[in-house]
Length: 328
Image 1 (cartoon, rainbow, N blue to C red):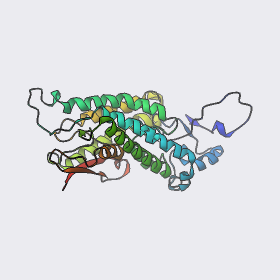
Image 2 (cartoon, one colour):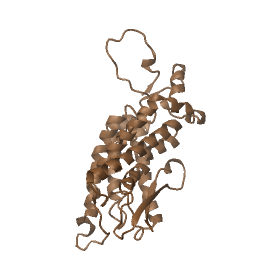
Image 3 (cartoon, rainbow, N blue to C red):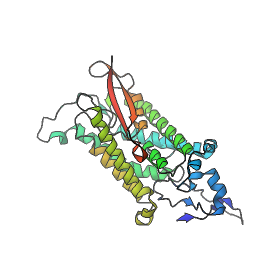
Image 4 (cartoon, one colour):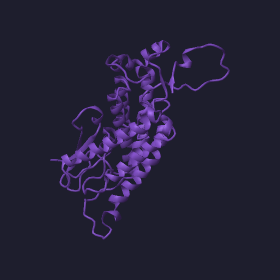
């Protein structure tokens, strides 16, 4: 449904009660572009001047309109993404909550990578069960975070989704920058909270570790790239594509996103020894790296991470890879 104009811009008649304000935003996850304005309606000129991504298919001038950095609302939404980063809303609030809880359920003591010695193989080890619980957590928590934050910030939670929507021309450059900053900050704060809650730095977190003696950087990059590709395409297909709005509706799309995230976070974590799952985003890796900063490895060396975007362009840009090196 395309809204011809914003009701809150007109003040005809008396309102006896407060009405909820739903900001129009083409990049709202789960909204399937149902909460947008008509770009061709003259009544919406003022709205689109202030919020260019209130409608899809922006021009380059609208995308890179830097006046968005002066918008108080965008800064508020970015803070939401931060707190729920692992959750998808306030760039700070959503990211913080989501990263912390999804990391907490997969955290386990640091140990050397060894091959399974039983007939059950990997299916009877912590390597299998730890990401299983993480996948279930992602499946259940992600939709709830999207429901909570999508009416305000759009419920992206993940930098991967934010970058993908930017290249799809449904969010503006200022919004992207603020959201990415909020999401990364939220992940970092979650890392500090994780360290404090666990009481030690001697632990491993799913999605943020690769043993380069067993898995090469190129192999890890391929897994990251494919995992991000699956997340992006399916999230767009079920939660952002306007053609799916009447098929799934806003109530179902977020659950499908949770299913995709749960399956990929679990399914990429146990097949290859030395690789414990896709990271998807710089924020999630940042949280773990900060919580493990200067932590001694089992070999006595300090370890640190280098995080980078995969080569390529367009919606495939978001995939992240984390490579660990021994620091002499």
